[in-house]
Image 1: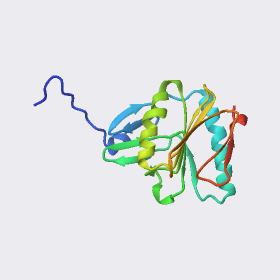
Image 2: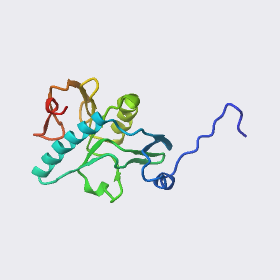
Image 3: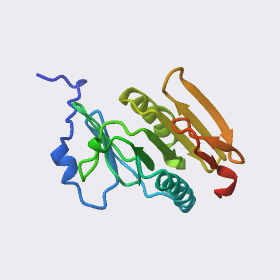
Amino acid sequence: MQTATQLETISITLEQYESLPENTRAEVFDGQIYYMASPAQIHQELLTELLITIHSYLKQKGNICQVFPAPFDVKLSDSPLTIVQPDILVVCDKNKLDGKRCNGAPDFIIEIISPSNQADDYIRKLYYYKNAGVREYWIADPYRKTVTVNYFEGDLLTIQYPFDSIIKVNIYDDLEINFSNML
Protein backbone atom coordinates (compact mmCIF):
# COMPACT_ATOMS: atom_id res chain seq x y z
CA MET A 1 0.00 0.00 0.00
CA GLN A 2 1.29 3.45 -0.93
CA THR A 3 1.03 6.43 1.37
CA ALA A 4 0.29 9.93 0.14
CA THR A 5 3.98 10.85 0.26
CA GLN A 6 5.14 7.90 -1.82
CA LEU A 7 5.22 8.42 -5.54
CA GLU A 8 5.25 5.53 -7.95
CA THR A 9 7.60 6.17 -10.83
CA ILE A 10 6.79 4.24 -13.96
CA SER A 11 9.76 3.56 -16.18
CA ILE A 12 9.44 3.74 -19.93
CA THR A 13 10.36 0.60 -21.85
CA LEU A 14 12.37 0.43 -25.06
CA GLU A 15 9.19 -0.56 -26.90
CA GLN A 16 7.35 2.50 -25.55
CA TYR A 17 10.25 4.75 -26.47
CA GLU A 18 10.37 3.33 -29.99
CA SER A 19 6.62 3.91 -30.39
CA LEU A 20 6.88 7.67 -29.74
CA PRO A 21 5.87 9.77 -32.77
CA GLU A 22 8.74 10.08 -35.27
CA ASN A 23 9.31 13.83 -34.78
CA THR A 24 9.44 13.58 -30.96
CA ARG A 25 12.74 14.76 -29.51
CA ALA A 26 13.27 12.88 -26.26
CA GLU A 27 15.89 11.19 -24.15
CA VAL A 28 15.52 8.65 -21.35
CA PHE A 29 17.54 8.69 -18.12
CA ASP A 30 17.05 5.77 -15.74
CA GLY A 31 13.71 4.95 -17.35
CA GLN A 32 12.34 8.50 -17.15
CA ILE A 33 11.59 10.34 -20.38
CA TYR A 34 12.72 13.93 -20.91
CA TYR A 35 11.44 15.89 -23.90
CA MET A 36 13.75 18.30 -25.72
CA ALA A 37 13.04 21.54 -27.54
CA SER A 38 14.20 22.08 -31.09
CA PRO A 39 17.68 23.62 -31.32
CA ALA A 40 18.33 27.25 -32.26
CA GLN A 41 20.02 28.39 -35.46
CA ILE A 42 23.40 29.04 -33.79
CA HIS A 43 23.31 25.49 -32.40
CA GLN A 44 22.70 24.02 -35.86
CA GLU A 45 25.36 26.19 -37.51
CA LEU A 46 27.99 25.02 -35.02
CA LEU A 47 26.82 21.41 -35.31
CA THR A 48 27.19 21.57 -39.10
CA GLU A 49 30.72 23.02 -38.93
CA LEU A 50 31.87 20.44 -36.39
CA LEU A 51 30.25 17.57 -38.26
CA ILE A 52 31.94 18.54 -41.54
CA THR A 53 35.34 18.87 -39.84
CA ILE A 54 35.12 15.50 -38.08
CA HIS A 55 33.61 13.71 -41.08
CA SER A 56 36.36 15.04 -43.39
CA TYR A 57 39.04 13.87 -40.96
CA LEU A 58 37.53 10.39 -40.60
CA LYS A 59 37.09 10.03 -44.36
CA GLN A 60 40.72 11.03 -44.92
CA LYS A 61 41.78 8.37 -42.39
CA GLY A 62 39.79 5.64 -44.15
CA ASN A 63 36.55 5.68 -42.17
CA ILE A 64 37.89 3.72 -39.20
CA CYS A 65 35.14 5.38 -37.17
CA GLN A 66 31.74 6.84 -38.06
CA VAL A 67 30.32 10.21 -37.06
CA PHE A 68 26.59 10.83 -36.56
CA PRO A 69 24.62 14.02 -35.87
CA ALA A 70 21.50 14.21 -33.71
CA PRO A 71 18.97 12.82 -33.74
CA PHE A 72 20.64 9.43 -33.47
CA ASP A 73 19.90 7.26 -30.46
CA VAL A 74 22.58 5.95 -28.12
CA LYS A 75 21.39 3.30 -25.70
CA LEU A 76 23.74 3.53 -22.73
CA SER A 77 21.82 1.07 -20.55
CA ASP A 78 19.00 -1.47 -20.84
CA SER A 79 18.15 -1.56 -17.14
CA PRO A 80 17.25 1.04 -16.24
CA LEU A 81 16.71 2.25 -19.78
CA THR A 82 18.97 5.16 -20.67
CA ILE A 83 18.88 6.54 -24.22
CA VAL A 84 20.50 9.81 -25.26
CA GLN A 85 20.76 11.75 -28.51
CA PRO A 86 24.13 13.54 -28.45
CA ASP A 87 24.54 16.42 -30.89
CA ILE A 88 27.56 14.68 -32.43
CA LEU A 89 28.91 11.22 -31.70
CA VAL A 90 31.78 9.17 -33.06
CA VAL A 91 31.64 5.38 -32.93
CA CYS A 92 34.74 3.33 -33.69
CA ASP A 93 33.36 -0.11 -32.77
CA LYS A 94 31.00 -0.93 -35.63
CA ASN A 95 29.59 -3.84 -33.58
CA LYS A 96 27.81 -1.23 -31.43
CA LEU A 97 25.73 -0.12 -34.44
CA ASP A 98 22.58 -2.09 -35.25
CA GLY A 99 21.02 0.01 -38.01
CA LYS A 100 18.79 1.88 -35.53
CA ARG A 101 21.15 3.14 -32.84
CA CYS A 102 24.47 2.86 -31.08
CA ASN A 103 24.31 0.28 -28.29
CA GLY A 104 26.89 1.27 -25.71
CA ALA A 105 29.19 4.22 -25.28
CA PRO A 106 30.44 6.11 -28.33
CA ASP A 107 34.14 6.99 -28.32
CA PHE A 108 33.67 10.75 -28.67
CA ILE A 109 30.66 12.97 -28.00
CA ILE A 110 30.10 16.68 -28.51
CA GLU A 111 27.08 18.40 -26.97
CA ILE A 112 26.25 21.96 -28.00
CA ILE A 113 24.69 24.05 -25.26
CA SER A 114 21.18 25.39 -25.62
CA PRO A 115 20.11 27.95 -23.01
CA SER A 116 17.29 25.70 -21.81
CA ASN A 117 19.41 22.61 -21.08
CA GLN A 118 22.78 23.73 -19.71
CA ALA A 119 22.54 21.62 -16.55
CA ASP A 120 21.81 18.52 -18.64
CA ASP A 121 25.05 18.86 -20.60
CA TYR A 122 27.34 20.03 -17.78
CA ILE A 123 26.04 17.75 -15.01
CA ARG A 124 23.65 14.95 -15.98
CA LYS A 125 25.24 13.93 -19.29
CA LEU A 126 28.76 14.34 -17.94
CA TYR A 127 27.88 11.78 -15.25
CA TYR A 128 26.21 9.32 -17.63
CA TYR A 129 28.84 9.58 -20.36
CA LYS A 130 31.75 9.13 -17.96
CA ASN A 131 30.15 6.12 -16.25
CA ALA A 132 29.08 4.51 -19.55
CA GLY A 133 32.64 4.50 -20.90
CA VAL A 134 32.69 7.44 -23.35
CA ARG A 135 36.36 8.19 -23.96
CA GLU A 136 36.05 11.93 -24.61
CA TYR A 137 33.18 14.41 -24.13
CA TRP A 138 33.17 18.03 -25.27
CA ILE A 139 30.65 20.69 -24.32
CA ALA A 140 30.58 23.57 -26.83
CA ASP A 141 28.86 26.72 -25.59
CA PRO A 142 28.24 29.16 -28.47
CA TYR A 143 26.75 31.73 -26.06
CA ARG A 144 29.74 31.92 -23.71
CA LYS A 145 32.13 31.06 -26.57
CA THR A 146 33.79 28.24 -24.62
CA VAL A 147 34.53 24.56 -25.16
CA THR A 148 34.92 22.27 -22.16
CA VAL A 149 36.93 19.14 -22.93
CA ASN A 150 36.44 16.11 -20.69
CA TYR A 151 38.91 13.32 -21.43
CA PHE A 152 38.07 10.23 -19.39
CA GLU A 153 40.93 7.88 -20.23
CA GLY A 154 43.79 7.65 -17.75
CA ASP A 155 43.82 10.67 -15.49
CA LEU A 156 40.60 12.66 -15.78
CA LEU A 157 41.30 15.77 -17.79
CA THR A 158 38.88 18.70 -17.87
CA ILE A 159 40.01 21.88 -19.62
CA GLN A 160 37.97 24.87 -20.76
CA TYR A 161 39.04 26.69 -23.93
CA PRO A 162 37.85 29.95 -25.52
CA PHE A 163 36.34 29.76 -29.02
CA ASP A 164 39.47 31.27 -30.60
CA SER A 165 41.39 28.08 -29.76
CA ILE A 166 42.61 25.18 -31.82
CA ILE A 167 41.70 22.14 -29.72
CA LYS A 168 43.22 18.69 -30.07
CA VAL A 169 40.87 15.72 -29.95
CA ASN A 170 42.65 13.53 -27.40
CA ILE A 171 41.50 10.16 -28.77
CA TYR A 172 43.26 10.89 -32.10
CA ASP A 173 46.91 11.66 -32.71
CA ASP A 174 46.40 14.36 -35.32
CA LEU A 175 42.85 15.79 -35.20
CA GLU A 176 42.64 19.41 -34.15
CA ILE A 177 39.50 21.54 -34.40
CA ASN A 178 39.89 25.25 -34.99
CA PHE A 179 36.93 26.90 -33.26
CA SER A 180 37.92 30.39 -34.42
CA ASN A 181 36.63 29.38 -37.87
CA MET A 182 33.31 28.02 -36.59
CA LEU A 183 31.03 31.01 -35.96
